Image (tube, rainbow, N blue to C red):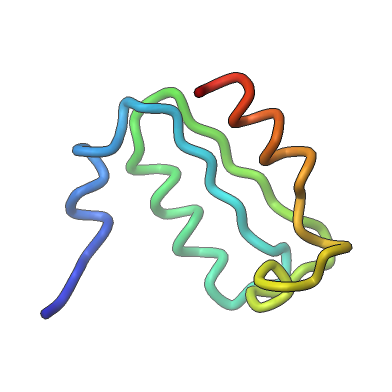
Length: 75
């Protein structure tokens, strides 16, 4: 079964969306493309010096402050 999240993004948006991508991630363009398709309210946060996998478990690069502020503002 295939899942194409870009085709369903209008079902999620206009709820607040936070896209997080590593500056050096090979998959960064997916976040940028999804950001462009999403309605408002949205934010794209690029983590400096991070690759894709860095944001899975590199505790020094995961932007916990950004996540906390986003959820505090939008939940």
